[in-house]
Length: 327
Image (cartoon, rainbow, N blue to C red; front, side):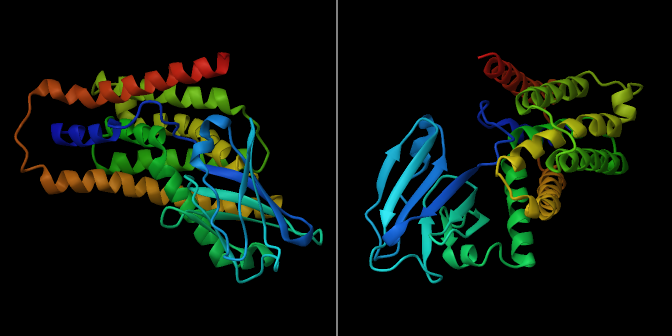
């Protein structure tokens, strides 16, 4: 691995050390329709993060919005007395989330649920889609694929792990085998956990994911030609990929998906994760090939900077997550 590519990998660590790579950036909410056009919108949120959830923007005939804060949820209430919400209405949620899983209980007792993703900084909720259950197959596929792409591109610890793997590989063929092994491994545990065959507590998984980054970064720093990790980095990727799959599953299960949508969500969320992962690796390699002949040669000692930076940040994550477990 050349000095320039190592410096490009360093870009991946210029991020807040406290970031949670497997927070899907999604929340679960419940909209309940009461008599005479009265609505209650509850969203699960800790009081420290209530500032992320501003009042929804309503159709002109509805409002005003009352806010009832709580320790574990935030409640918005409003009225549409002239006529209840209809198929033509859209609620705009200016919430700082990548997505929400919204369940609706209508006044007649029927229910509907659906995932809505951010668009232009807000989350639009089309009432027609909730009246018509989950919508088309192609629309659901698009939503879950987009959710997977967004999750991986904002999943800082996952990207750092992929970057640390690149510090180990030698040549394009070994890189292909390593990334493929990682993909197959985390796809397996993602499926097993999401479908309920395996149940692993999320807190230890998150701590172990941080530790896996530390271990791989350390191997990248002390690698030798005859070392096992250099000769078989795909084995390391496969072993730790199983662990990362449980992290993805924990993020996806936090949406509270209905059982009927789990297979669909699992398939396309995983496809989205792989698209984002490939894009990340391709971006690093593409930048390298564009600029490697135009950068001034740097001292040899700078080659160790990315490994130490990745390992140092991951170690901070590890201690932070252990502290949360013991709190």
